[in-house]
Length: 278
Length: 132
Figure 1: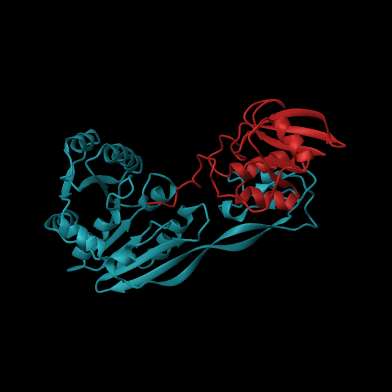
Figure 2: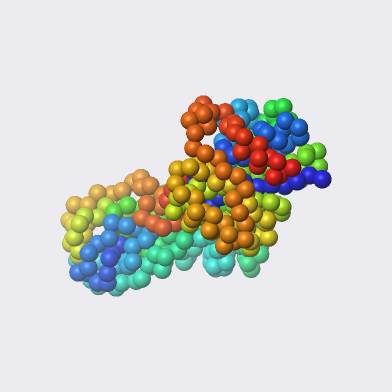
């Protein structure tokens, strides 16, 4: 049975990609691993793993196209647009701001005159690469596009047919707890919340653990840079959410060196995480 | 001709705001033969909008049939709207709405032809969202 695991954390810069790639690397010693880099605003797992990725598919969404012969300048399309992507000024034709459009098609349904048809716009790319037992699938959003969850969902959909071929699917999410993170965490069995022993780490851990509870994802905590401060606050926070720290990764020169030279980090505790997963 | 000035409060004597999309008010001034004829203040309902405030604010002043906007800057998406509906933007100076109108009428304000950074005035995700 393929296992689907996510690495997330709320806070940015806590080591989500660093640990996700390290665990993928560790698991790949004995298993086939599909790593999905779903931090589509700045995907970079390929750099850490030294995997060359190339585009396999464009991600497109629908944008409305207005037929000026049919449009009566009634403004209904603009009223239903929750993304404020259609501007309506009386006596003028509707104005589309394509970067804002989420492709929901509400405008097309709302138009009483059938003046809106569908046109496609490219909003991102799906990229793929391989090295040994690891297949890396990355999503990358086009600069300026707002809706990153659309890319996340497109990558996940692309992966669906291939999932059965792998022993493990590892998902590396973006920071935060908003739409692209939610989309990335949906249908995941276990999520590892990576954090650090700082007040910021504690605060954002609370948020991500709350989100995982909402999404019914079983959560574990990984404490990165575990020795830079007292970890008690993180232990308490984990306990509050009925979970615990399953691994600690210290702040070490060896790890920093590997990281800054663009290599997956290695540490005995990373092996421990892999064991928890196995 | 109608002119919209982004403003910190209501009325001609209030301070002009350098922010466009997320300023609290717009003072709409009607001029005739280089004189202020009358004015009214509208609330900027885009002010607290999560994203795309500039777009909605541009729509708002567009619906007031404004031809000129006086503000500190406007973002790229607001500019898209201005270009489509034929509104020109002029750079405001520190001072009241009235002072800005007088300077505009005297030809002392510069036209802004390129948009400022997106999401500059705001709380929206345009600001720093792409950082890790």
